[in-house]
Length: 330
Picture (cartoon, rainbow, N blue to C red):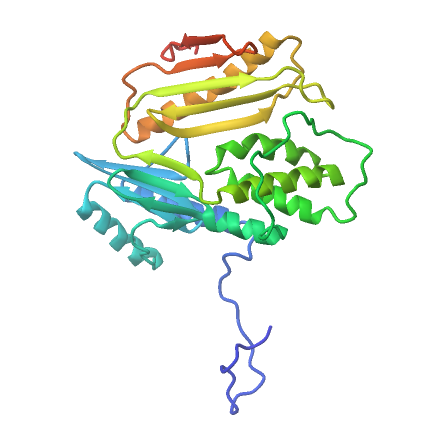
């Protein structure tokens, strides 16, 4: 270890540092920190969410407070200024916190709010991704992927150093937090991180050029909304040329706000297009069940049962199905 600059004194040379306690250097640091914080919050009367263990809520009459934790970064929202001030005072006494004020930037996500609603973007993160890929001066692309191209293990030349491809795909996956239109592309490209080729890199560059077309695109959550869940799910059938597995996809809206989405290859091979559609609908149903549990922590009770729209292979057929989610064997 080296003594920090300016600390050694001429009268006492050859000083050493004695490590009293380490947080980030221990293998159990994350678990111990979360356990300590959880115990402290529960002693204050918070209830830990069953659907999301990093969410804590407290209800005092008509006043509610919600606290979301990511390691040592905390988001807090409440309808009571007094309850919020009390929480910050107690947290500061126990852990010495820093109040960053209103939410503007969190984990690479930019939040812009006004009376109409809240906008979530990753513009800064997207620009840094393009700069890291060396595409800042390239022309943007109007589409993320070629719809006629199916990526698979080809005889193309493997990349001599796949580290750049792996890094860019990982950053692209994180960008899908506010860019659901990139989910399918990120899912497709992530399958070849073990042995990427030049063809895969060209496809990745095209996706990044599409990101450059609108780096500030994101999600908008209106201030006034209805609490009804609407889900849309779809799947292809044996589209993957390597494993012949289908890809499921779904979008779930709370009112007019998009709150959950996924594009993922199915775990098994479906023997018919109907089976592939049912598997896609089953995945979407599991997500809706989880969302209903999560919404209950916010005292949001759905006024209507969730509505599904299953998009079949035929473009003109739209099947709407209403499920009874209250049965014990759902």
